[in-house]
Amino acid sequence: MKMSRWITVSAMAMVLAALSLVVGSRLLPGGQGLQAAFAAEKTARIAGLASMPLGLPSEESAKAMLDTSIAYHHPQWIDVPMGAVKIHTFVIYPTLAGRAPVVVVTARNQGLSDWVRAVGTQVVREGYIAIVPDLLSGLGPNGGGTYSFASEDAVAAALGRMSASEVERRTEAVRDYFVSQPGSNGQSAVLDFNWGAGRLNAAIQAAGAQRQVQFDLSEHAWHNTLALLTGLADPGAMPQEDSGMPKPKDDAAESASAARERAAAQEIAKRKDIVPGHFGGPLKEVEQSPRHGEWISIPVKLSTGMVNMRTWLVQPLGNDKAGVVVVIQPAPGMDIGEAPHKGEGADWLRAVSDQIALQGMIAILPDLSSGLGPNGGDFDSFHFADDVAKALQMRSGVDKMEMIRAARDYALKLPRANGKSGTTGFCSGGGQAWESTADIAGLNAAVSFYGTPPDAATMAKIQAPVLAFAGDDDPGLAPRVAGAAPDMQRLGKTFEFKVYPNVTHAFLEHQTLGENAAATLDAWPRAMAFFKKYLNAQTSTSNLSGN
Image (cartoon, rainbow, N blue to C red; front, side, top):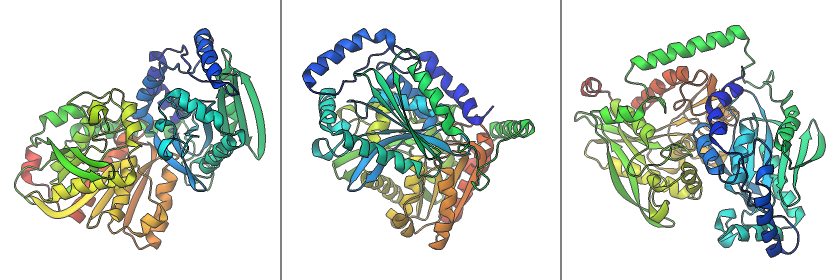
């Protein structure tokens, strides 16, 4: 079975089993007379509950679908350039080898809503790169987008004022951007939901030809649309001879892969020096650790004002001087998609920090969502996991880097700090770890786990060695990491990388997928050795005997 289909069954089947498929659509029809349209749409919404196309989420189930998907797909928020404007875009990459088609999803009069993003999670599990643009980017209050408007009606009114040509221009700019990116096979589709007219409009671009198809939003409209899209993946989505990506495996290769994974999982179970999987008991490891980490508060001055940054700190046993490693969270936040619980959580990231301390280094883990929660709360104050991720993408990259810098500076002032420091992170945190070597003076090393390489201007400013890891069943990232090697070399940077075969995004967390356990067994010791080399860290006898 193809990796993408296997992961879909194992990781996402529970989504469909758990979610109701009745609609509570809040979409509004276009045209004149917005107030009348609002009323008509509310009437249509109630009347249409029983006619929602099969397979689509309801408005009520959208949040649950996003919450369930977020831990597996690690969504990204990317600003797509369009002249002087940047289109804020929600992006999810599928888990598969080779290149995949791009599918852009929009909904008439709704903007970047939870419902449209939930449809994106349906698209990605079919093996497509799912793109949901905020067509209101830069048009909201204070130059914001959908989230800057006071109400859904205000969003619909703003979209109603946009010309059809401007909507098309923005949509095409986003589609063209992602079609040109590594991981895309060059084929694309734009799916636009128009509930007011009762249509789903599909614009297909494949093999140099364009095609427009309309579906009535009846019972099987969504399934028919997905059937229409299947041609996009053939043959371009399969690995090409010059792609550097793995070729399809036969039965013998599949069996060998499974055997390697079983052996790696058994080895990890025996060892105490390998980070546990996200579902492999990280809380137990933290609670039973003799290193006894603690939550602290660090004041940080951001562009938006002062924030008390909630931070997890754990130090190695003994009295030896130690290097500092800042641990940077992924895009889903500190809980990585788990439901927030007040006063608890961040179990996997705290287990990662504990493993770093086991190796003789001071680990410090800042909550980059500090102050963004309800009533100025932290990551554990949110109701939905998706809300944490959504809030995080609203905080500027500059402010996030300032928080990372503040955590590092705090740890360097501890009595045991030896003056050396590094960063490590996962997903977007991996990208920030990479970038930090350019933005934070004095860093000595960075390890990026499945993080996007920085742009050329940032890369030129890098002042510290970088180690990067990715899996080749990560079409949006694997080509980028491998492709960064010649650029780093040309710039005279110290760079090591490894792209693992049959391995997904977020492989350290999801060790039961593909050959993720095998990759973890290799990557984690490499990362710790890298830090020890550049931070002069030593694993003391007291640390190992106390684990």
